[in-house]
Length: 553
Image (cartoon, rainbow, N blue to C red; front, top):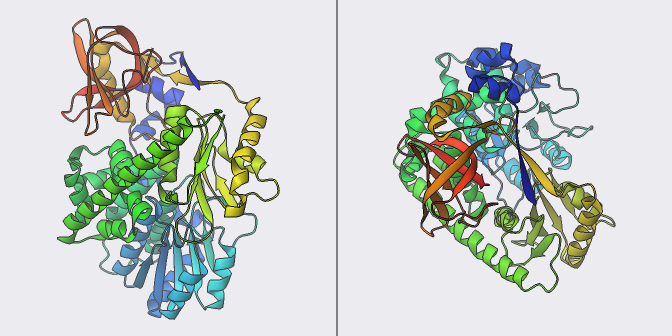
């Protein structure tokens, strides 16, 4: 897959205004965008469907001293959401259990066995976090067991909602909420706001709930939701709270990772914190990550070490699986346009990461399957940036190939039986080939602006005003023309990252490219060559501007 770069025309000489215009933020709204305001940018929680009845049901549970369960997803959205809801509800006087399903033993969402066990513990109210919208059968089972369910979720809602007591989801077809892009923790946060707006307990100070925004911020920055509207405010203030380092578990983890809380960025959350939260469910028990985020005292340090060890184990398993997959690919007599493979020994929880690595190397869509507990095979897939993996699976699904599948353009998951796995490669390859005629061979990437190396400090100040970045508000991409690469080095434990010294006239700066070599770019590099550098501008660990390299032309 070849990338073609196009330099966007400037609409405004001022860098910040120009970049905001390119992102669809009109000049009369730019000041508001640059300065998020908590009150102004928070939409009324009671505009969400079923909020009123959900709040009343929670307050009734408190009055009647019922046992409540918060059932959350196990990823870096649902898990912080579950910790937040559990801590908040306990703070205001409810008796709460936090249940997180095991990724491999229970899978995503609600399940009957878990509900049965909670019923035996006397649970009368279940509140979901980041799941539940499509779990009609399971919620009907909960009803039979005398458990009311309040769903807080952000996944696409079906036309017929589950038979829950309340379904709070901005993606409901009948929702009039002004913004449907909240993550799971964002929706759970609105329930917190709704409860306090209706009934703030005596002694629960105004604004005290804002200390939970670190958890909402982690989730918002981790879950690929658009960083505009209410999400921009939640991410902004989430980072503000994280930088105060008031949560012992998070502080212990940042210390272990050698990240200064005061200078924490969205990249630190996305590349350092979120993978470790996710590692708990991929490699072990998600409760490890939940306990870390909820930790109060000395146990935080030990839990941070445990999470780091799980992440290290995850890296080893991923690297081993990638190596095995690449070896099998090298032995294939006839190359395929789609990579499809699996093994009963591969852990389903890490296959998305393996697939992403294979896409980077081979520039093809990747579909991988494994098995861990049970008879069903479970898989993950990643797009090459062009093919829609869900469309591929939909075309391949003739005669019910999959037990289940879903996702979005770039990533997805599937399950199938052992009896049908031999059909998977042929079906997916045929589906991809039928879509191929509609797919461009090249991906066009837009460059925001041309910069001289000497302009980096000024550009960095402008970029920092626009942060945090994410889906729907992407980092500015610059091109630095005719730069000399005066030094090349590899760094990292396994020497898998690339560091360059970039020089032009009297200006000099560092350029880095993670998981890259001198041959990783459109123009392979050698010392003292001149090239055009495509990349992002960021701060290095010393507080100096550097270039995060995307490509070299």
